[in-house]
Amino acid sequence: MHGETIPPAELKAYCERLKVILQNGGKIKEVHAYTVARPTPEVYATKLTAGELNGIAGEIRHQTGLIVLAFA
Image (cartoon, rainbow, N blue to C red; front, side, top):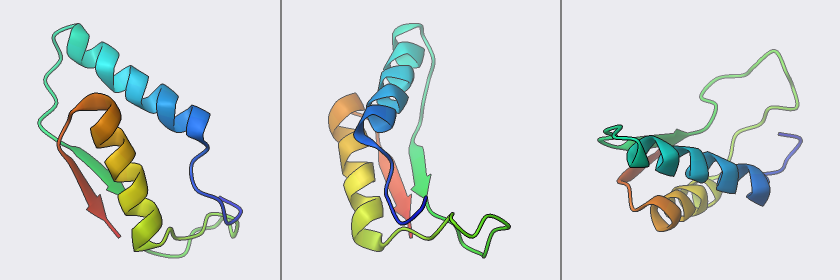
């Protein structure tokens, strides 16, 4: 939002939540990382570049060991 990607602390918290789900017996086949596809009512919600999205997906993979698919 506002031309920025997800803050590192928020991404870490997201990954930690995924790990808690797995540790408690949850099954996650794959994670989908995606950006906005159409204009939103919030003009500050802008599309991520493929590089930004792939970086986020890579970090989720690294922190969780899960399969992550990125859709730009």
